[in-house]
Image (cartoon, rainbow over all chains, first blue to last red; front, side):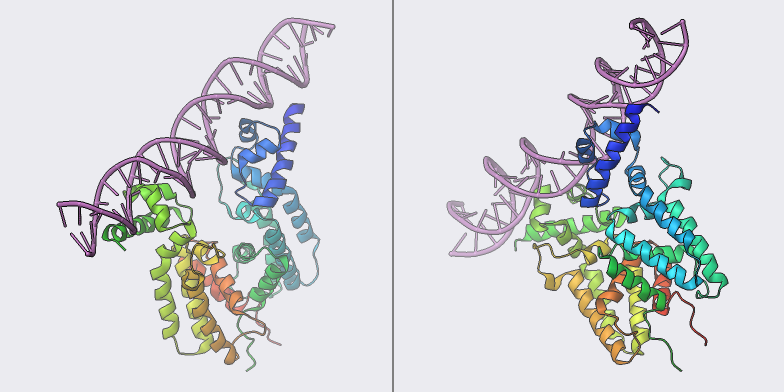
Length: 179
Length: 179
DNA sequence: CCGTGAAGTGGGGTGGTCCTCCATTTGGTG
DNA sequence: CACCAAATGGAGGACCACCCCACTTCACGG
């Protein structure tokens, strides 16, 4: 890859980080290109779809999140809950990740390395561990807890609120039985 | 209101119902106007914002949902759960309601009569009843359960999956204690 | 040091969107 | 039937995504 190509790619990413931070996932690509001092064609060549750009923008944050998942090794149930809280909080503050996480495959990028894939792998490990420890209700799948955590963050931009809702869903809305 | 005005309004609503059903909440207003055989200005006069149009499109369905809420009078906890399931299932199938439900005030319409307001009132009654019966975990608010049910439906288009997730959140992801 | 070819570029075009103005038509009423 | 306010729709401005293609720039081999 040529030096100028790499430089432009970085400029685009920096601009995208800024504007996606302001406007969320549907920030104007044109505006991102302008801010990066780059023609719109260049943006489209580096990132053939909006999804690809979002994935690149959030890649680092997601990788960090996944590393934290791997570092956890306390009580399996609590670890899963903690991590889901973090995921939800991250999604809530970082306007736009959710779209990258929830988006289906788009043919332009390798699914293996997307935010979706990375998060899925990290979550699967925590869920398996919790399941083996008997900490999860029967029939709960990885996709279920991910769906819960991610969807909650579409509803609020406040990380604390997102954490609260995750705890709520984790413990249950219904009052504990005391028969 | 003049006869042709009312007729056009209905045509726009019919077109919107169809296209929003296909494309979700960000269906093209232009396309809706075309399908209704109406100029785009006419659409904008009848519905000054996308939000107003969505609200009108889903008004009937939401009213029906609210009537069902009022009709319930069995076990307060179960009633709430049932109704939230229905809400989630409705939101999941009817692509786009969620945006109408979650959208903030937009200044163009009276908040009292929006989908958001209607659903909020219906839910408040069920939540209060469940709370009085001690069926809810401490600190659960109406907005919490609404946020749960609505956000879940952004994550799937399958009503059964949405129902399942609501049940999951209601009962809790964590395995019941059996100490 | 420099020529060359390929990698990389960006402006401009196309077709789409939302929304507003305003000259014109149309419905209902006296 | 005449009138006027209500209602209309097309044109137009501002924006957007995406693609094409003539051009520039880099990096490497001689």
